[in-house]
Image (cartoon, rainbow, N blue to C red; front, side, top):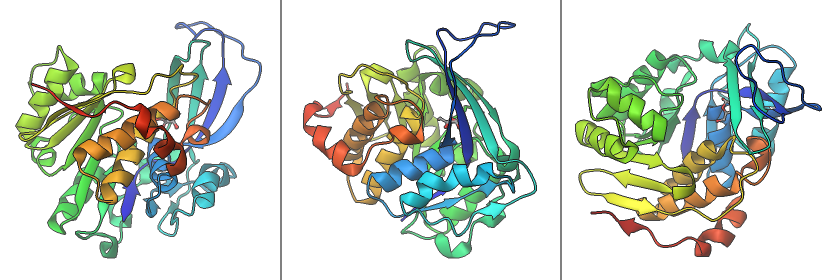
Length: 307
Ligand code: RIB
């Protein structure tokens, strides 16, 4: 069973010719309101990739809360442990330019009230794969990770957006998933080598005795631990919008791992899931189903061992 502890947002998506420079106003033709938030996106990605998922987090009392939940509800995720707080539901303002580049600004709102204490003890055990990100208070993440590990749960942290990770927490994490910038920032916080993202990931893995997976965009992803040094490629695609691609990777990886795939197998599902999420605008509208992922697995080269 996958339990996601994290953020739920509504995304205001605006297509623009170019992204605004500081002080510049740019015009877009209109906007779309879609469900988002890294926590909710990863929960939905895992559910669409075939997993049983529970989402734990906070929403507001405003009408946007329903928008934030609509896709998760439709996918059959368990929303019974969400908490409603007297704050606005989280909101992300997202501009995407013609080339698919984006700017994202998040007003955290209700997500700032997310507490580890919301997480029911009954959901923590060896059968639980706990998935977390960094859009809720970091201290609550650390408290939950300590509790979950003591109960035998497996822990996947997507350190996005990047922030320093305490050394004792790093060693409790089973899988840390980061993009290239996040790998460099986290390595810097641990006083490790930071120039090359792959080397940074390898060093973080060594320091934390954990598995670190770094996503590399069109180059796929690499995974490092004391026993693994793997590289997975990416589907050849023409990206329309990369918003949510990282979340699709994480959710696909979690779902495949929860089904019993080994690291190499889970990396393949994750890579295909991440690529397919780049083919449509928006985060949640673009997250692929298990059928769509499995239909493309054969197009992906086998996972390679790196020297
Ligand atoms: O990772 C994409 C997500 O980041 C968006 O859905 C937005 O809500 C922000 O949290």
